[in-house]
Length: 357
Image (cartoon, rainbow, N blue to C red; front, top):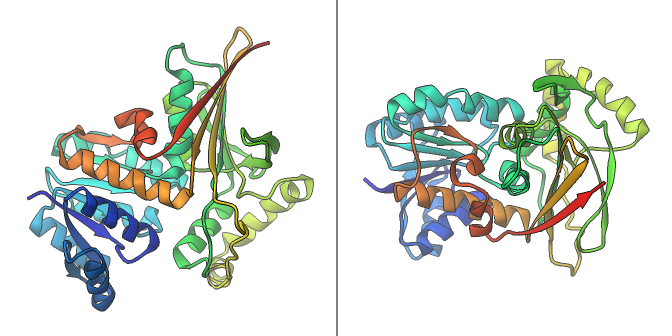
């Protein structure tokens, strides 16, 4: 059966993934809890997709095990919780794709490599701008050279906003702050100051932005893709500056207290997100800077438009390639499986700068 199931199909990303796969004439199944919304989406998409309603993810997992679709695309977070449940339900030959960018969620999926390889299915985690954006940039930087000694990757997503933060994103944000920072030192994943290493970047379009260290799936993907012993992953979403650097460890410690964590999630979930772009179209950037022992540098930028649209394009492209048999058994980040050209297939373009100091 060549069905592609989309979990969380009525969300922004799920809807966009479904639309892209319908355009590719794939057999799409919209999966969720709200049958009227699912059927309305199916009508919007020309009644091409079918609909599957389940009240719980446990119910969805049972249906996956029974019906063995070709590919399951999981857009439902938090992925550290939903990912193992859904991936474990996939029988031999059913491939799994998610949009995770939380460090524990991504590393947890990658740790399943041997089990996935033995059971004959492919697991792809981080199939969105988060992970692939910076991963593709560092793969492009490393392409024709040996492993660098030092790497920094920076994620600078923009997208059309509006609405509230929502529970899933709120949980992810709280988990990032509660988990603290990490980087690679001497090839080992090591605790580091969350929000440290702030750097002001001049973007290729002339604007400036500040990024700071953040623990994410991009960190492990950059280390695996480059082979560098020293790796930092940074994001413009993390508060930067001296005061933020001092405050974040305290905030993180407080958020590890369960009642405070629950209260913070509720508060964040209800915050209204304003669209600050005005008439300007969103421009999303990912940057990788690799430094070699001889002092030479290579900086690679990936440019995309709306970061959420790019994420949907990546997830749809990965699902389409898997249903066509282009994957291989095991667990991977998207660039590790398909190479940096996956980002171009999803609408990104690369800019390369070589420097010798």
